[in-house]
Length: 69
Image (cartoon, rainbow, N blue to C red; front, side, top):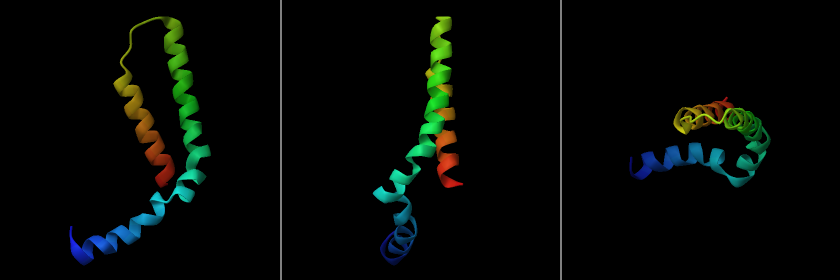
């Protein structure tokens, strides 16, 4: 997008990326981070090799879902 169309959509999304709005989301994001850390602890205690990619993808989707709903 360019020009007026870009400006219109930029104005729509700007509030969602303001630092004050993002700071308000931190407690909610920390809930998902806490679950993620617990999963990592459990896996580390087992001393098995595991893939981080599925875990981090799930974390990303959980955070995105939480902050957009």
